[in-house]
Amino acid sequence: GDMTTEYLGRLRREKGTMLAVCTKHYGEMTASAYSSHEELKFALDYKSSVTVLPLKVEDTYPPQPPCGPEHRFDKKKLAEGYVDMVFKPSVVYLDCRNKSEREIAGEIAKHLQKHRVEASGD
Image (tube, rainbow, N blue to C red; front, side, top):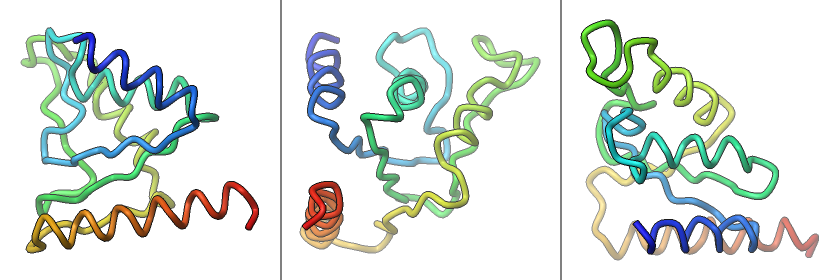
């Protein structure tokens, strides 16, 4: 709870990049105030200062969070809408399937460095 809140505040203040570990159910609405659904809402609310880097860790992408009339928390399919708004076709993901932790970390670092250079205009 508090660590997540601290992290998200720092992310916004520093115009950082949020790593979204995109499982099939990423973005599902739950009872938790600290769910991936809330992360998506945060990213959308602060889209001018927060960049999202999707990490594709499963074959299903973009995520397909459970929702609909039978869902306990999301009968109106809001999660699906948030996924569509944040993971637009123009958003490039990092394919992390079949890669070691070291390879994934290297790709994330390369992406973050490139983003930092582009943001500073160097």
